[in-house]
Amino acid sequence: MIITRNWLREWIDIGEISSEKLAATLNSIGLEVDAHDKISLPASVVVGLVKSKHRHENSDHLNVCEVDVGEQSLQIVCGAKNVEAGQYVAVSLVGAVLPSGLEIKPAKLRGVESFGMICSATELGLAKTNDGIMVLDSSIGELVLGKELREYEIFNDDVIEIELTPNRGDCLSILGVARDLGAALDLPLKVKQEFEDVEGAPGIGRILSVRASDEISAKFTFRAFEIKSELKLSLKQTLRLAGAGLISACAVQNFINYATHSTGVLLRAYDFDKIASAEGKVALDIKPMQNGEFGVYANQKLLSVAGICQDAQFKASAASKIVIVEANYTAPLLIAKAV
Image (cartoon, rainbow, N blue to C red; front, side):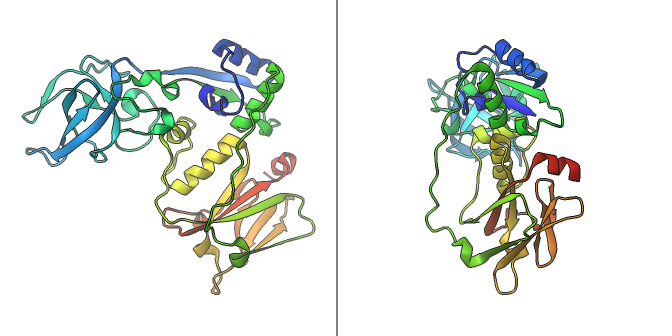
């Protein structure tokens, strides 16, 4: 289980608790710290704004960018496919030394001078977030041109990996770990914001019905979401997911992974069109299975086993128009026995 100090602070105020005390407390309450690393970016890596971009006249894959870094604008040659004018980006200035040992120097690429480097997450020693440069957004804080990235909390953080025993499924989330830390340190959990229903969301009773056997002892909640525009995680969410090894190519699945890792609620996302009947409705059946677990069925096809697995062919994808999201609580002991 991977947690970060910054992420924990969304649930519990540990601002006055040192990293050493945090690790010692985790060990003392049976959440063994297996690894403890520090995220720290090098000096002279700053916030920049791509003011313009044009194709390098002697290359099919290089672009020549004008980048504002506060007190000056730099000409930087960049080979990333996703670089665009108007983006806030991480810029390594001349003199910066990256984690790989690369020192940034003035260069000439195919006859064009370049004074700096627009960086990807991996070039800065962070987990891989995409196949191009890292695009900054306001989720990390106010974007000030020329400000060093190491001054932002998300880039100055502790990453802690906890080795959990099988009986500690309650700590397979940031909230679960924060709850135990709060008890040990006598700190209250923060009250989370309540969200109202999204205006214009499809009426779930119009498109979905659920039948459950009397033998079902788990809890299920379903919501329907209509996707009308491109879904995109914030940079903070993306960095956290990548650091926890949970990033995927599907935006819907990324949101599901983020919510589950943060709260511990077991979530599934189904593509409505893949499980709907010819009449355009979904009828779900929740039934007990052979080893005491609970299966979720539609059209007599097994979509998922609550708390254990989901059939990939019914998952929501980038092409999904309506997504059915399932939240489930099944007793951990029941899941452990079934598995």
